[in-house]
Length: 322
Length: 247
Image 1 (cartoon, chains in turn cyan, purple):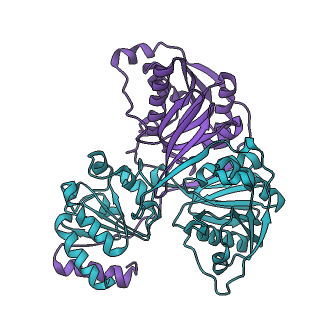
Image 2: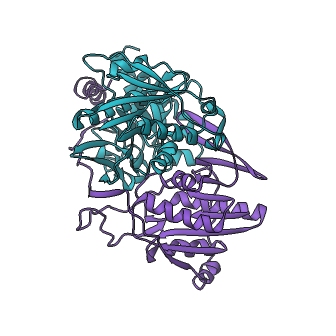
Image 3: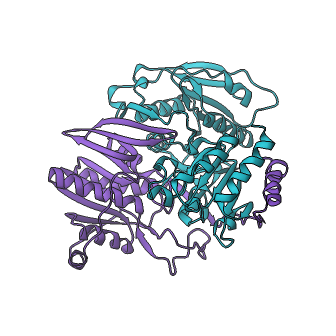
């Protein structure tokens, strides 16, 4: 299969999701006897992709692409997929990837498998796995059309550097775009400056009602600071106004899959588990030993988060040397 | 203003999932079905747009007879018209196409959905409908302002928010925070029982995906649970560093 991998960029550099997409694409290409071509929108530097084995990359350029319109990106990817005769287009299931992929699938008359966590090549088919019912079940499905669009859940396909790095050769790609392809445009972006977002963090320390009050969240922030982690929060404390909605992990907040998730004073309501159960290692700190969070935790401390956190931060400092 | 809002029916969030005998779907015995929580924000926004601008709100659901319940709730909240497109398909393209067909007939200024349904969590329907209708779409919308035929919307992105501009007609998917949904009053719930729901057959379309199987997530081995003594906390740090190798 020929795989077209959409590489997300930010401020002219490849994002972490780009390397994950390359790794997932290489896996599909290897198991189906095919090849990978990357595609970047605009003028980003593709050289970092070589370490992950990407040898061939399109760079799409068009004045209308500067308007940051997901519909124009979808059109560009559709034209590139046709020009390259790609069987599969792979994208990250990020906030923009989720807007682009359904449009792209309609344009290519392709089936779409969203938010996948595993791919298995079976003849001409790709069997994909994805979490459904808030992570309480896993759906295996296949796309029945010849062309396939697949999005991958961020942080699940760990980006792997290859033993023999490639030199990424770039080719300019000029899509044929008209004003009508630009539908909604981004007029401004406000970033949470200086704060790591839970959706992009490798380590997350989340706090819940067990912290007793907003004034105690510095205990969570302190451990997060020591670990270089993002601060997360349960729905209960966001609804209570202790923390901003942007930090909420769970069904009505963000879905995360970090390497390490530390839940402090969070009982583990299903709404919360839905957002973090695919984390690689889960640590629970809760004074109720029967709290549901312990059922999915790899490590647990039965104790009051309020008292455990400061001690834990001290001991972590000794290990990570900060 | 002509407003179309798409609603779906999903198992209650607290449902314990049991895999059905076919190995491809859930066992629906004892499952309580509710309106998809994100659709409540979409429906509320539709009602507010009508209150502000006048016009009509049409609620549409693609599903089986059971899905009439969510349309009854919408009728109790005073939507003007309710349509059930009868289909048991779980394929997003089939569902999106049927919704788009209703939109083509109604010619809405605004089409509203929840950001995702909490059963299959696929995030596909809103942008697919927009693409089929050749309309702009804004997903995961937490703030919406409409002035004449142009809209400005705020949406959540990784590490912040972005503001998006588009012109009507447009498709919007709602995120928590967009509004505070109202609840239907008992007399209105009673009245809604006798209001008409228009039923129509789904168009015959081939699904583009096929379910191979549904399974429970792999059971996690029993985690190591420690106490809260200094020694236990030191042990945890050691395990994270040496065994799990995550710090």
